[in-house]
Every structure is written in C-alpha cells, then in structure tokens.
Length: 149
Image (cartoon, rainbow, N blue to C red):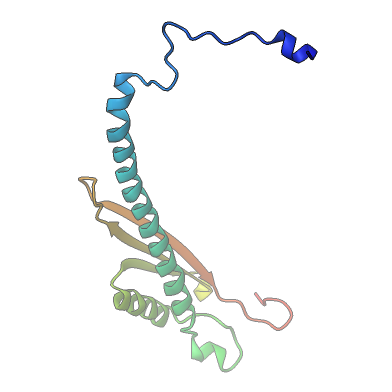
C-alpha cells in the first residue's frame, strides 16, 4: 500500500446528510426574485437606449446646425461662423423630422451650437414614464493645417 492510501479514512454516511438539499425559503423565493430582476432589467436597459437615442439626436442636430454658415461673412473671408437664425432653424428642422423636441443655442459669436434634446421612455413593467435629456455641442472649425480662431 502507498502512504496516500493508508491515510484515507472511509467516508461514513451522516445521519443528517443534507448534500443536494436547499432550504424551503430559498426554493420559494428564488423564482420570483429572478423574475423581478429580469423584468426590471428590461426597463433599465430601455432607459439606457432612450438616453443613447437622445444623445445621438442632439449630436446630429448640432452637426446640422453647424452646416448653416453665414455667407455674408464667409464669402468675403471675414469669418467662418454659423448664421444664428439659420443654425437654429436647421437644428429645429432636424429635430422635427425625427420627432424629437429640444432647445438650440448659438454662442461664441456663431462658432458653437449647443443642442439639448428631451426624450421619454415608457417602461414595460415600471409604472412611471422616464424623461431623459442629452446635450451636445458642435464647434465650427476652419483651417488647413490647424483650426483658425
């Protein structure tokens, strides 16, 4: 016999052996608990999707607004800035076409456009409606090797 075989103690079955058993409380509560966690996770990810969608819309609306360059200043080469009225109009048209609502602000003498979009998520299992907001800014840059200011 080898030394390992000599040290083994034969396993004796215990009178109260509970291997493979679970408490009644755990058996009753684990199903509903997993179901509840799963249902709440669906709504949590729905809110995240709504937030991402609002963020995407705000980025694209700001980009659309920056396309409205003021031709009175750009053609003679005075400055490359957004036309405030045209930029706000372009962003609002983009938001209206996508069915979103938001605010548009032109700052920094027409170089920066900031768009804030509000969205809603109507949950499947949660009793209230969630409102999400996203804000994005676009800055008009012009230059060949580096942006001019």
